[in-house]
Each structure stands twice: as C-alpha cells, then as structure tokens.
Length: 171
Image: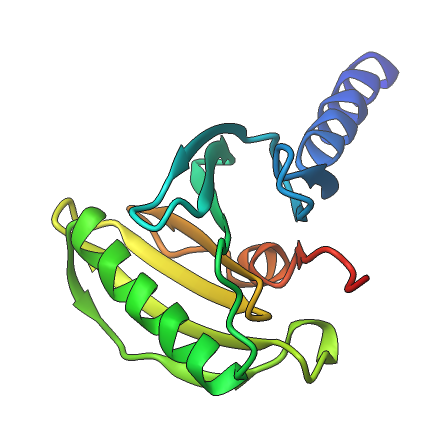
C-alpha cells in the first residue's frame, strides 16, 4: 500500500506545481503578467511604429496569449484610450479569424486603478475554439490577454490570468 501511495502523491504534487502561477516579464516592454506557462515573445512594429510584443504558451490544453503594445503616441483621454483598445480588439478578431463574439463588456479597472480601462469578450473562431479575451489600457500601453481551447475554459484559472497584466508604474 505504501509503495502505491508515494508515487501517487508525487504525481499529484508535480501536477500542482507544474500549473502554478508565476510572474513573467513581457520581454523588454516594461509590462509583466501572471501565467501558468512562460510565453516566448516576438517583437514587431505597428504601422505607426509602436512596439508590439506577442507571445503564447500552452498549459493543461489551454493556449494562453498576451499582446502588449507600447504606444508611440500615448493617449491622455481615457475614453479615447478605451476606444483605441476596442478598435485594436476588432482588428484582432479579423486576424484570429473570429466567427462570433458575445460583445464587449466595459467598465473594468486593472487592480482597481481608475487610470486604466478594461473590456472583456467571449469569442469563437473558425476552428470552433472557445476564447475568453480581456483588454487593458492606461493610454500608454494596450494589453490584450486571451485564453482558448476546444473545450469549456477553466473559468477561475483563466480569470486569474486575464487580470494578471501589470503595466509599468507611472514615473
């Protein structure tokens, strides 16, 4: 009996620790995020020369992704920044071949910070993947975090990830 319990306990503990939440930097953007896996980032430029950092990784059959845009021209008005975030998420829907969306839920604040704006949405893509997406902005950065898979997403884990973006502190 003891010989079967020990391997079982080792299996459980390795599973728990392999899916623990850790803080990772978003490359050299200044942003960081909490995730269950370490994404490798690609860096590119937008048409206005803003820096774009994109990364994905997979944990427990869920793909977790983050896009961080360091805006070349910051937007001081938070309503305009939120509108820019919505336009960017509309752009992403086309790139990710999204076929249906629930509609944006507004009014979110990152860590209760009134100088941020956040929106959430649920998507389905052409391959029938279920997506949960949350976008954040402070007018200097746009961060979009998403999780998807073919099954029902583990809501609690995904919610922790989607709220795990950390923007650079104002100087």
